[in-house]
Image (cartoon, rainbow, N blue to C red; front, side, top):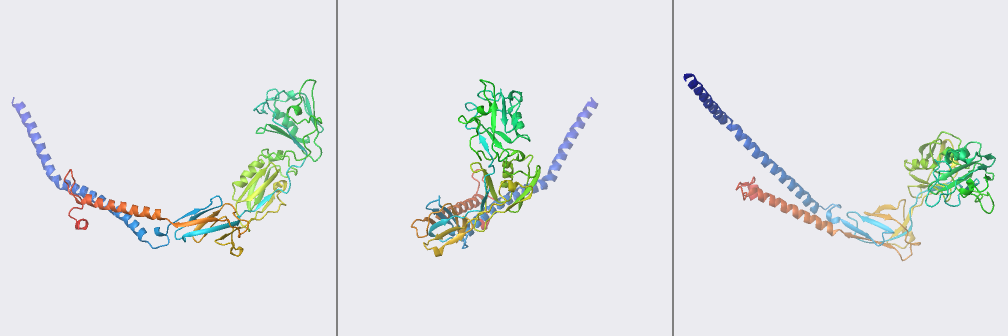
Length: 445
């Protein structure tokens, strides 16, 4: 019993000691707790002052804008409208003179242009007279003649110039047959255009394009099936020259240009001083054109199939605008009949403002320009002579809606600031705690 009593007494004494120590430590921490409470209060006050500073700063910015006398001040904001936006559009800057402006446009600014001096393919050529595959189908040139999709399977052999094919059934695919035609030693190239569903046959020389087919009785020959056989004159081709134009999606080395490429691999040319590289063994005409258009040569190039010419249009404008080009290595510019072509220079825009006199004509090298704070964009001409009564009226007015919006914004922010100060100087309706600014005469006086 004495031992048990001693243990209980010891535990009791230890518990009392721990309680005493905890109380003592709490007393020692009281100054630190007070400091932390003050720190939290100060941080809260600092955040509130920072928020107020931001709100007042925004309000001050608006008040300065409303009180500004600069040309860019809100009072100088302008709106503009055009009587015919298909002819002219306009945008008035701050301080532009309020009024109406009668614009007469006699000529738009244009860029320089250049095109091939002649068709790229003037050798004898022919094309399918209509779609080859039945219905809306197309020919799959990767398959044999029996499975490619013809209405009737072409059979027998074909003769082009002095070359005669093997029996069509022996070719593993239509493409294999066309590759045999396009090989060296044959006087023609043949292609299939899937988009048009037509075959193209082009002579490699300036001599007449002759072709025929040999089939067993009751069978259908290739040229009949691809609709190149003239029913009135058997095996005559449709047209005498320039019937197709070059194939712009064919590898350059296989494209039947009038002029042969001197390089069978790489070449270079310059347009407006920008050097463009090409590879005749991998590039097509379309690929070269895309490379030019994505370069910094500042031109748009396209191949016009109806003209069989390459057309170049400058992205610039004005009477001093021009286009220069030359071959560096290889002869692609010569092959495209561009090297001796003369560029047509650009033209300046010609107009008058509030005048019917030619002596008041204004010339601009671009269709977009600014005069007296008003930016104009010319889209179409509207007169043939400045004495014409027709014109496009541009109206410039003060932008009262912008001013009203700015004033409303100022009032909204002013009310927000005063309400914020009021909230921070009074008593909280629920906690009854005084606001941070309570008793501060800066906010209550």
